Amino acid sequence: MTMTMIAVTTLLLLSLLPAAAFLNLNFLPLQQRTNLFSTVAPPHFNSTDHSPPPGAFADDDVEIARPRRHPSNSNSDREKKRISSLRHRDRNLREMNYRLDALVRARNISAAETLYRETVNATFPNDRFSFNIMLNCYSKHSPNMSTALSFFDSPKNTNIKDIISYQTILSGFIRRKQLTEAISWFKNMRNVPNLHLTRSSYNSIIDGLGRNNHIDEAEHWFTYMNTLNPPLKPDIITYSTMISNLFKQNRPECALKYFDLMLANKIAPNSIVLSNLVAMPTDSTRS
Figure 1 (spheres, rainbow, N blue to C red):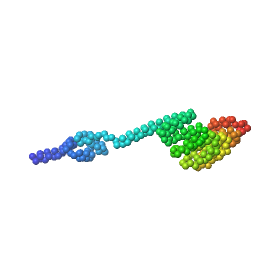
Figure 2: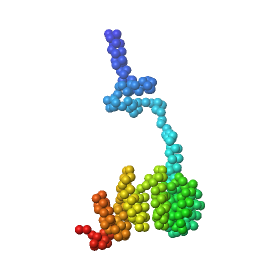
Figure 3: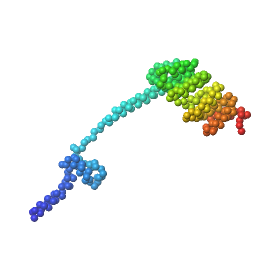
């Protein structure tokens, strides 16, 4: 009887050991406690989530996470300062260019030259916009084109010239009715490396030639635009320039041919074209 009681008591104690292990786990090592909860999860615990439930670890086992400064924060701050500095620089440059352009428009050449030399070019060297403003100043307001050409050919301006710079010189020749120089300059523009002539470039030479009674030469460049590869199709400005200049030279029949060509290319006429058609002599109108 006594042996039976001992055996029953022993079995009862052995059956209570797993429950005791779950009630107090601090006597187990940390890794064993993690493995235990990852394999035997409570009913309310998501078995796919291997993180231990709240309160599973003792306080002395929890590593307190301390906020750390991101290593790229300092670089980010420097980048923000750099961008802010560039924006401030660009704002100052724009303001100076506005002042420079205002002086040129007012024909205050000496003040524009002083501002460009002592402020703009000294603080922001090789700025393309400032250079083109001054080039336009010399092209429009100098007694001849020599000043503009000297400024254009200056070695310090070699790397900042663009299509606007070349067209400014072209417009200067046309404005002074130096058509031989204008045609020569335009032909040279086509041979400048990495300089891509635009439709506006052709419109300038076509209009300049047409206004100065060289309409046949203007027609040549109009036709030449379509021979380029890829073709540079004339736009409403090109057509209206040709039509207007042909009417001025009393060649309405030829002007009407360009009008038909414009409609065939699905280009709607503008006010310049329509006003020329309205003013056309009655005997030149078609049924």
